[in-house]
Image 1 (cartoon, rainbow, N blue to C red):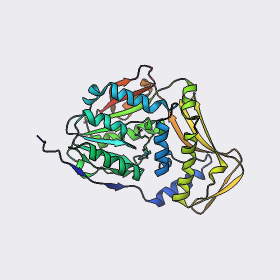
Image 2: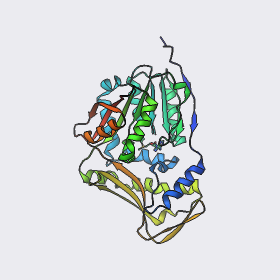
Image 3: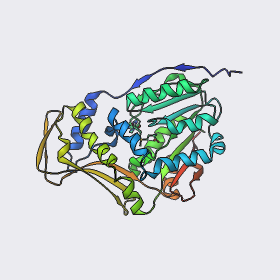
Image 4: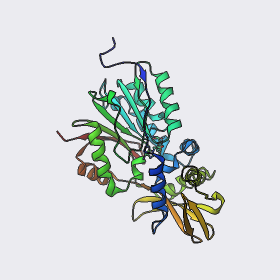
Length: 325
Ligand SMILES: C[S@@+](CC[C@H](N)C(=O)[O-])C[C@H]1O[C@@H](n2cnc3c(N)ncnc32)[C@H](O)[C@@H]1O
């Protein structure tokens, strides 16, 4: 029998910040003393496709390891999502891992939140077609800013889901603030399931971000094409090189685009000078041990309930609970 809260519905919610905000943010980052662009700008249509290709690379252990953890523990993890809850996924991408949850749990609604509109819509539509008794509300938003959930979700218990080690792209000092925002979305007693990449051998990390087929290189360089499209810029992708390495002291993989020569690039009317070898920082991917991550969660008022790991402890899927009342 259908419960009162269950209905089959598909509705798109557009909460994407306006393009002028993106242009200003890009120019501010590219004119800073250490040039930087937020990793959220990787994800235009091409960037999302390139990321999907990365997830299938032999060197990129992250996706297959996290997927394995979800599959191997599907019955336990099913208990983490209450029936008739609203599952809110941060950075849903292809929603491939969500399918493992939806096969075992019975949320009433699924709210995938992503900045990459095209992939968000197509993945959400496929979920809607494949899971009969589910309301699906794709929400195009930047989760690094506060955004409104579809009001339809009001009244449902929320469970947040943030796989992919995407939390590793947030600076540790900013993680508690981000998690406090999540805490407001899921409410007191709400749960948050998050995929966290762990510290491991440097060689394994360096290989994962420097694959032999050059897909990560193409993904990194694609950010320049995206900036050209949204900020009237004239980056020449052939004049920048991909660089990624693990910084053990900081516990993070650092990714950059390095200027192959002296050059001037126009971005939204500003002229930006690059010296030969000067870098644009595009991504940090922080790796955590359990204690380090639990401390950040606690600072945000989220309690560590439990975690599942693969045999080699290369990745962990952590269940947090909003301890607030
Ligand atoms: C590393 S991918 C992970 C995708 C998928 N969750 C997985 O586990 O394979 C990061 C995803 O988050 C999205 N994303 C990145 N930054 C975002 C932001 N600030 N707001 C909303 N979505 C964002 C990207 O578009 C992309 O789909």
